[in-house]
Amino acid sequence: MTDTPRDVQGARRAILVLEDGRTFRGRAYGAIGETFGEAVFATGMSGYQETLTDPSYYRQVVVATAPHIGNTGWNDEDDESSRIWVAGYVVRDPARRPSNWRATRSLDDELVAQGIVGISAIDTRALTRHLREQGAMRVGISSITDDPEALLSRVLQQPTMEGANLVDAVSTPHPYVVEAKGEKRHTVAAIDLGIKSNSPRELAERGIEVHVLPASASMDDIRAVGPDGVFFSNGPGDPGTLDHAVAVARGTLEDDIPFFGICLGNQILGRALGFGTYKLKYGHRGINQPVLDRATNRIDITAHNHGFAVDMPLDQQVATEFGSAEVSHVCLNDDVVEGIELSRDGRVVAFSVQYHPEAAAGPHDAEYLFDRFAGLLDARRNEGSR
Image (cartoon, rainbow, N blue to C red; front, top):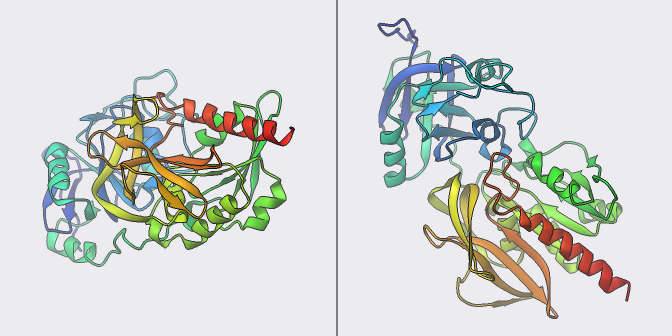
């Protein structure tokens, strides 16, 4: 392995190699080293700190389509989890210095501190167009070798995202509780498949005490909480591998506990109802995705981070063993299923969305879904008191 040379400005060089051999040369950004993962692009113009700390990006190398990254630096308030989860970071023009009153250090400093290898000064537009045309694929970044063929051979040895069960690597090892804000109205068991910090916070703001449970939690663990509802979070990997989570979701429906899922939680609900999932060509990642709420004809601009989707009929209700299921939300870009609603005996018993209503960096169009879940819990309590 040869030491990478430096460019005329003295910056250390780096290379990025995709599994099809396409190579980009640029400058080292973040930690010096080598990293591998699935190359995906994210279209958000802001919120890079929330993106980098989203556990759903575990084992993915994220390409920022916004050309200028790092201008707001890094702070100790906006993390969505305890660490950066991306496998690598690709940017075009890193900010020379942060300029924000909340910043405590630069993005580059934080990438170095957490050992995240990246690359800058490449044509991210060309890379994004390539991924759009060819699909998400395995990738390697190196700032310790200048040999693309050697790096490619290691890229091709990496596992693919299909068949990857990753939730145990990102889930909390121990249960914890997020207290309700103000008067406690309900108790919810949240299954952590890679949960973002803002999800329990949004529930707590609505008077809900949230018991966050590991992905390995059983129905007995859930019943021990005595929940009024169950929440299934976002998370990484292939939903087709998560048989345990699907079994727990089915147990929730069998116990007639109100269910709310987001992102991976949407795919888990789909599988629990008997539908399949499939991998998208390049996925949806960013904070500008238009989604139609079919019940209201309202269009929300939403935050996404998913590479898989639920395969179910778009234009008909489907009878399942748990009730009548239908697609409640659709992506206006490509007609991907973006939400599921399950009804039984004339009332909604479960719903989920493929996107992120808790998006801390915005947009906030879909925050009302947390109100909807709280309303579902209120309605169930009122039914029980009759």
